[in-house]
Image (cartoon, rainbow, N blue to C red; front, side, top):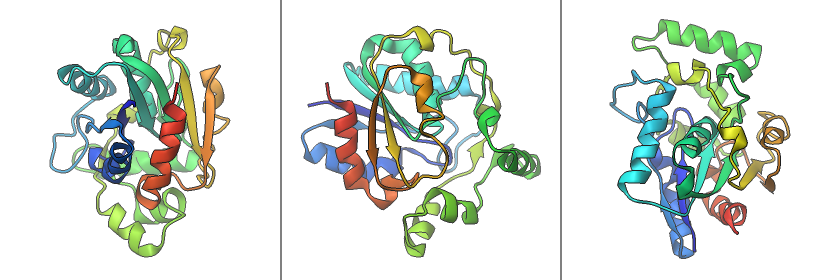
Length: 235
C-alpha cells in the first residue's frame, strides 16, 4: 500500500481531494491533501512561490511522511518539483496530473496563451489583493467540460481567488532536472489545455497514464481518478 500526498492546483484547496481520498483509503492506501499557503477561503494571499512550496514541505515533514507518492495537479506540478528538490529523500515517485512542468527559469505565466496573459493581468490589477478569480464561463467550458451545469456551479463555489505572485515567479529548476526520482504523467484526455505531450515531454523518462475526463475530474469522476492515481503511483 502507498502513502499519497495530493497537491491541488490554482483556485483550489485541499478539500477538493476529499472524494478521491475516500476511495484511495477504501483501497487500503493512506492519502493526505495539504492546502498550499495563500490558498483556500479567508486566508492571507500575500505569498510567493517559495512560500507555497515551503508550506507543503512543512506539512510533509511535520507529519513525518516518508516513502510518499507526491502528486501535483496543474499549478501543483510546479510545487511538487520544488518540494522534490527540498526533501527528495522522502519521495518514492512524483505524479504530474495534467500539470505544469516548467523549464528552468520559467514561470507559470510564461506558458499561458496570449488570451490568458492579458485576462489574468487585468484581473490581478483590478483586485484588491493582487489575486485572480477564474471567471465561471472559463471554468464551465474549459476546466470542467465533462460536467453538467449543476456540478459546474457547485464545484465552482468551492474555489477561491488565486494569489498572482506564485504564477509569475520564475523558478530555478536546475536541481529538479538532475533528480533521479521516478516520475509519472497522468493525463485526462478531454482536457484541452495541451498538457501532453507539451508539458509531459519535459520530464524525460516518465510513465504515461491516461484516462477520460476534463481538467477537474476530482469533481466529476473522483473514483476513476483514484484508480488511475494508484496505477500512476505503483512500483
